[in-house]
Image 1: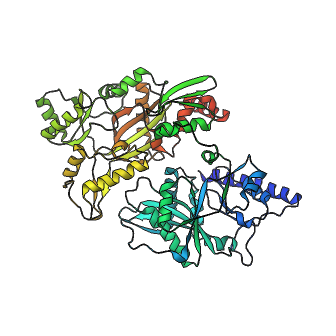
Image 2 (image 1 turned 120 degrees about the horizontal axis):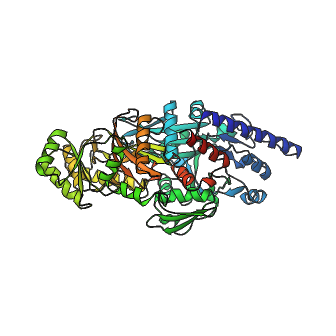
Image 3 (image 1 turned 60 degrees about the vertical axis):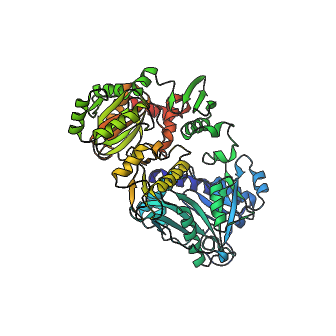
Amino acid sequence: MSSDKGSRDDHRGREAYAHRLKRMRSHGMKPPIPGGEEHGDMTPDASIDCGWGRVVFGQTFSDAKLLIETLRAEVPDHRDIAIYVRDPHVVLANAPQEVFLDPSHTFRLELSTYRPASKPPQGFFIRRLTSEIDAQAINRIYAARGMVVVRPDFFWRQRDARSISYFVAEEEHSGNILGTVTGIDHSRVFNDPEKGSSLWCLASDPQARQRGIGEALVRRLAEHFLARGASYLDLSVLHDNDPAIRLYEKLGFRRVPFFTVKRKNQINEKLFTGPEADDYEELNPYARLIVTEARRRGISAEITDARGGFFRLSYGGRSIHCRESLSELTTSVAMSICDDKSVTRRFVEEAGVKVPRQMTSDAGEDAIRGFLEDAGHLVVKPARGEQGRGISVGITTYEDLEEAVKAAKAYCDTVLIEEMVQGEDLRLIVINYRLVAAAVRRPAHIVADGKSSIEQLIASQSERRSAATGGESSIPLDAETERTVRDAGYTFADVPEAGTEIRVRRTANLHTGGTIHDVTDIVHPKLVDAAISAARAINIPVVGIDLMIKSPQNPDYAFIEANERPGLANHEPQPTAERFVDLLFPLSMPAGVRHSVREAHKNE
């Protein structure tokens, strides 16, 4: 969210709130007193702005109608939360079409019984938020977890606040931010006679390799409030978030009978619209993202084969069958071009896109040996295939090349031998011949703990990646992984020194444990031009273009391949699903947006 937009939204919210306060006074209702650090009796009608929305303390409200009016003043694109609501049934009865009872449990940790951890975190440490770079990293984690992002300057303005505290987990070696948590001091906000505190927005980077990030953040916040003299630490967690509940119970939190009320807005939609169709949960994340966006717009979604990711979308008399991001708008000719990597290469090369040197495995031993000697490092891959299957990277000997060809032939009889281009793997999502998202994909790495073997570390990392991606990403313990580990100077059975980082795959595919890092805002225009030129050469409306690059900000590249069914869910928070549904059903866009899109295409 830009600062300008945030300022306009805040201004509109304040105007609406002022109007409602005037109306309250005209009806003889007591207006709210803003939450703050004042002394004396408990501050009535208290709330605190957290950037993503306000926490409204329901126990400070004596009037259900006033609580409703306070929630009505919610700023657009924010999410207010009224917690500790007294008589929630009365609140709901006053505005059943506007508010709902949040399906979350409240848990409490009595700080007098808290016991610190016996061992410090490994590979990272917890500290306070100290810079705008921290704030940007927090937003990146929020977005990756589907949470409401906050204007970075809000975090920065609050860094010295005594009522709200931000902590981050920082990786020791890289300085990357791995997780975050927010705490609110109730005594500072509304002179809480119970001296309470609460935890909000606990989140860790889904791609982090370290264990125990969430636990370490919760412990640091508990110890922070314990030192301040707080008596308890409360939190709200969705009733079906079993992993989080297990963590909290492990730390000594116990469920308490308090209730939370929220407004029926777009952000909260999943919480009050009821469960999806029985087969919705069977969809993989790539299909589910699109179906969710379609339903949000009022587009009918019929799941035709959940296991395969097939669904039919219907709107305004138009019906389109899809398999994830592949739709009936992609022709069979375009699909056949993408299906064979050698054919893809010929089409994009003809369009002026730069490609690496290549030959097939049946070119003859002398030709292949000469190619290997000249190139130094080769890539071997099946002409047909997806998700990184059968690909070997960094081949330097003819013996390894023969083994790699054999592995690739398990997936396709035609095997390509390609000059290896050094650099990073860049995936660009092009929808309707416009760039929507760009991300650098990095191969799977492990970080040694000094106790586990490399095989155990890979299995553990694979388990975490699978959990973070809904089963879509894992590191195979196959010959390619073993060769990569061997080339790094290790075997699967070795136990490296703690803190040692080892790359265990050469390909950066998500499905083989790779991680994805968004670079949409900084990608060089020449790389964007190359991706769009490739999409036009194939004549495909939705495609993932893979380039090898030196840097996202450098114009040098080499085309690798095109994917006719790119995983749109891998590129959140970029609006991939939104642009896909725009393509399929342009009439589902607001009229103003449709006009802007038409004008943009005219000017291209």
